[in-house]
Image 1 (cartoon, rainbow, N blue to C red):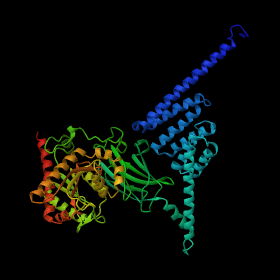
Image 2: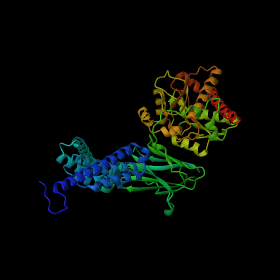
Image 3: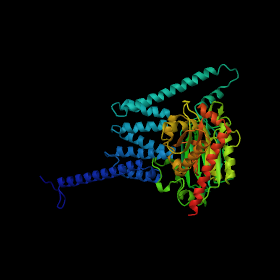
Image 4: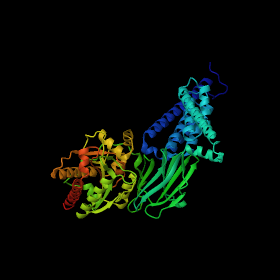
Length: 587
């Protein structure tokens, strides 16, 4: 039965139908908007290049906010709040800003408090607890959040994970208390020890010490090394210059649970090259921040080396000092296993286009690196200490190269210790044309012998991994892990040119010693991720002159005539390399 009150009014059933269609249409619109925003979130997470920009995350957050404001009590509201938390959490992973993590916490909290019976509430609480514990150093708050899950959401899909994390936090608190209790018992024995000093020792024992900061700088290249007492997490961010506030280009590195030692200055002014100043501070109590101020930046790379643990920063500046585009972070490119196109490789006696372009049609200066030295003896077997014999060979090689018209520089000319990362940095700053690192090998199997030459690339064999692990002073397992963070350092290290140089040197050494009756074995040219070659801007190789662990080969290596022949073989190869280059330039 139709019910009407006045002429011209719609009947009640028709009005209800219109309202129902309006609500349905609104729900469908929210559903479409939510799905669109969700797809954009998933795409952004999978796109590292776009995910680097804060503006992309903030635009996505605005879209979720608009959906939420349309119907803050609707069925999509808890999901939208959850993803608003996810957006800020993903942003925080890239910005390393505490404020972004806090924004994420706020959204997860709102979802959990407003929608206590929704199936996503325990997910919000668990993500909230993880951020509190891992990112905000709020173990007590994280425990309370997990307690809520354990009490109210026992049938939720996050219950087991919440229980595991809760147990982890409890165990950490108990270990901490027992450690403090045991040390407080010990403190009673010394008559003059004070409680304040004991507490200070306990606190610092859980931290890593920032021992010092070293740098090598020129007008277009800088390498900064941050020395630490142990391994720790590090994050970094590049900040553009702000002329209105008189702020230069800055790169800051945050070191988790790290405390600077007294020898580390708060500020260190640099008066040479593109590096202006190094500053050290603590943005939060548990984090040390190292800020590098630069004149200009074109490319930068941040990576960690082990044994001892240090964080290395490589920065290159435009030659004219002008910034035409944002700097490129080489640390975050995707792993690439393929080499460059064949047309860009360097045949041993054919055209050399890339090298000609980069080196001005000539090779003038060679840096010779005698491996190890000082406190680091290197391989020591059969009356051979690697550091002594490679230095002797380096000086022989230097004399021969000078006789052929090369300028020769050394990373060390005496028995001193030079860190691996400083050797390549010296070559970059001096703008040398070729870098040759000399070493002597060793193996547990005394039957293994032979000459081998390496260039920087992924290790293709177990033997190459073993050699790289020994020269880097790390385990073979770490070599496997290392390969996934070295890709861009390798792709920007004249890989193909280095391979061609290695082939010439290997062939020439073996030919030279065999011509004089020495029955030396050739193990060929190999590739591996060597610390000493990382970041080199010129063709660079590492030569293993032989195995001191093999008695026959050790006897050869103790013979000055044999070392002189190896040096001659290397010098002849470098001369041929230069000659091939000149031939191309004359074409």
